[in-house]
Length: 96
Image 1 (cartoon, rainbow, N blue to C red):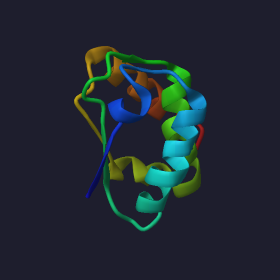
Image 2 (cartoon, rainbow, N blue to C red):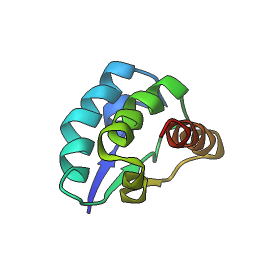
Image 3 (cartoon, helix red, strand yellow):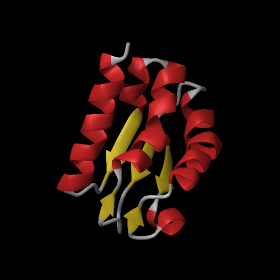
Image 4 (spheres, rainbow, N blue to C red):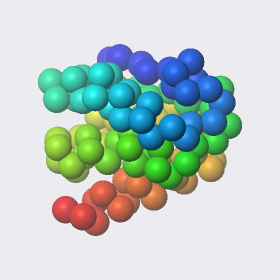
């Protein structure tokens, strides 16, 4: 299982949608498209925008199907970030 440590890529506040897109394309999609699981580690991140999380995972869910959520593991999220992830996942599940 691969771990992506976001803080080294985005700093303490995850807001850049272009960086999220790059992480999705280069790191997340290649792993989950092979049926493997991935850990997205938010250690050192104090906050994130909904648009960042959306850019990070929504297209993964759209391309791989809602069952891919089982392969995405979010680690070291504070309550605010966890809520944003839940909002994006709920939204994507409703769109299927």
